[in-house]
Length: 66
Image (tube, rainbow, N blue to C red):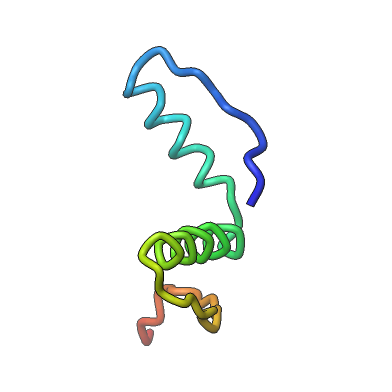
């Protein structure tokens, strides 16, 4: 995973806003890739052999009968 840029924020509030906007702009697949990367890093630190999860994107919606 490659870090593209680093932003300096003047406050925690500004940081939270920018962070939220960044993650909203990502596709579901990009979010899953980030999650998988962090999961693999956790296993690496703990000394556990990581394994890939089967990634499936499920779309939740309003499925009420009319």
